[in-house]
Image (cartoon, rainbow, N blue to C red):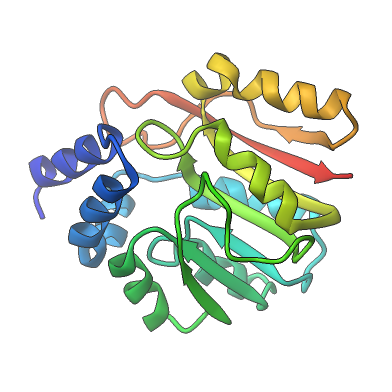
Length: 210
């Protein structure tokens, strides 16, 4: 895929108007996704893994990779000693690529933003990179992640900064004031794809569930 094709894919993802559009774009992109994002200098997986490793003990589990895509983070989690991981993604095509990597205990196809197919307090930690962004999932996706993460567990999220400023940060502050969670880490704004012109900043946060 050339640079124009990659840019078109990214544009289609950010302009998606519903979950079906998101799934369709990612299904078509799945086989080339890893190569394209590597060329773009995609930072979210490395940064979110670094933040998770700061707060979650090696070997803790089960972990949920929420918005796992092709399993980029799942591979790195396994290498660094987290080997009890499940994957969740909206795209069957992306999950098919992730499945071939053999790093997940289970794969689940579902969209963030509604009720997820897991029991309450199910996961010791959750990591979600590149999902809370334009055309994907907004603050409405946070509540059910809190439901399925065990008390004392950690949720690591990347959040597009425009989303953070337009209500996500306020919602986190409200939940913290209510004793639901504690914001334990925040990178502040950084560019997730320095190889792409016009990329707007994101941040990576870690939440400790009460």
